[in-house]
Image (cartoon, rainbow, N blue to C red; front, side, top):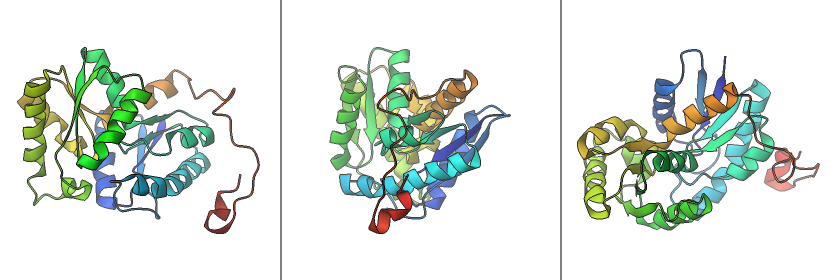
Length: 244
């Protein structure tokens, strides 16, 4: 049995439940998927400030997962916040949904475009594409300018707006696939894929399968150098409980 802990780094419980449903839908029947979110931090992650303040809660959930015997982790936010630090703490593999989705896109075609939430986050997406080696493959990053929490609101027209933008991106960029740039879009994936005629990639699903596969293969993050567990050190003030 494989136990995967899917961490939504914001505090929106309804979104966490939706993300967990999408992860369980692709996992093997014998795989246990636990979807969690921190009790502290921002209700959504839409800026560098939000991302920075989401990391302590994310790392607390990694520590809780280690205590619970989790085999691997998915960071279910497209900014991949705290990914490197999480890999230092976790005994099993940790995969961010942006990294996973971009890798999958390059296995399915020459290039891809990303459809994300707010325009202010497009720079972060391009930074990640460059970091992961996919800058040349990323044809465009397009923002629907819908706040993250509205994606999960059944009364909004978010699904149609995102689908329209995906179709426009395919026409404009001539891309081979679309990467959905927010975990809150995970439930949109199948509907949009049928409409636009190219693969539409949800990072939550891909990251879940990658973690599941890595665990099954007995592979985990190397601890030889950079990702070795941090050395003993005291942390003060609000971070005193994070001492290792």
